[in-house]
View (cartoon, rainbow, N blue to C red):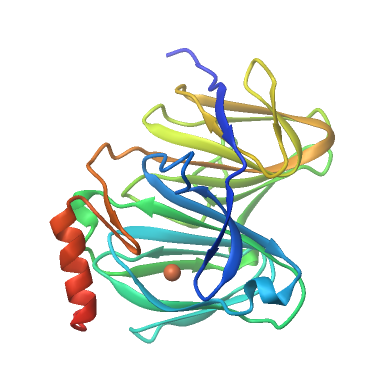
Length: 281
Ligand code: FE
């Protein structure tokens, strides 16, 4: 099959939002103009050096039916759950949590000042896995796969395999995700196979990315959805660029949302609230 390069379609910068005990963030997926991008249910970006914007953190709250991915660029976050699991996520580190049938956890900043910057992504689980046992994949930056590119460019691979064969530490049979953090020097080209079964997006962290064969510009702080195809191609602008490429297999199942619970039917969401209220998590 010949390559079909994915074109840049819809772009959004999200909306300001507040979550947890008052953490200020930008909600990009799960917001009115991009409700979801199957299987992605939510993408929050937080970036602030004002402690009041993040210090209250996310006190204990439940999740059921999907996975949460936390990827930090700056600052530290301590998480703790009702099964006794605890850890600290540091810059360049990732936590990929499969909530499955349910966990109750807290996510609190492990710092009182300084910059906090990072992402939280929610990835849906197929119906057959929504009630699976909870599990974690957690990796510090030194374990992350790093692929050097020309002119000091690099690709940090969290999940998936680059075209050059570098594989990230996260494994996931549910949606076969790709999660890469690429830094390119001016004019450098990044190319990556992404199966056409997958939804895919770019989020630009720094600079401007020129996407696809049409070289459509995508600016810093903007998410761009990539149209159907089997190959992603990005060319860095004159300042170079850094971006996330995230892709995963679309589930094409009914989605019923109720706050921290995402199931297939309304009845299953009500059951989740009932289980939570009656200490069955
Ligand atoms: Fe959470």
